[in-house]
Length: 201
Ligand code: MD6
Ligand code: FE
Image (cartoon, rainbow, N blue to C red; front, side):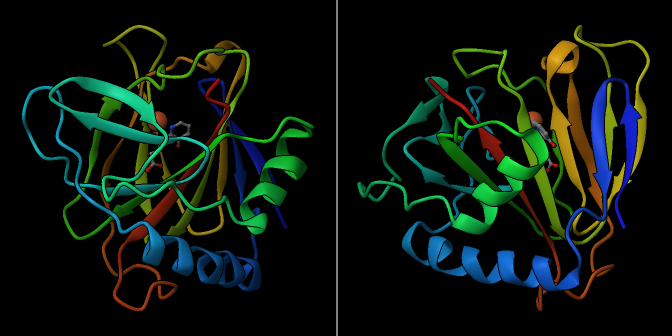
């Protein structure tokens, strides 16, 4: 059973996916990760991110010395694979939107990986929400406000949880402080996968 929480404007649907649905989604991601292997993007400041990433869809998120942006190809030169139907159906049922997302960013967290506080603002139109799906190990998710600094609230995201950043909260700062490596048995090697579905154009 799902339960809805709202944390500083971010809607959190706890246990949106049951264990069988989590396993089906993970299985659908395997061919995507094979076609478009995850890599550690370089930040504009020249550091490697601790999270490994890849994408599915017409656009993928990318970063290097030139900045954050969406690109139409994986670093291999191939177009990104299509977004799995299992992910599109979560978008449809949670947001109710007829418009499909252009990008499914796949973040993979190994032991010690984290993600600093950031806004998702590389998309053209902030009236569309960003939806995130968590798989695998628990992650400590921190949510602030639309300006950097100030009060924040934290919540543990668990496998099967879905979060929606939209409306007045679309540009809130958020990040992952740490994961509890090995807390879930969904990924055989441990770690966490986070999907974020975005309308880019
Ligand atoms: C993560 N999530 O859960 C990082 N962004 O690993 C995000 O950065 C995020 O959860 C936009 C919308 C929802 C999110
Ligand atoms: Fe984000």
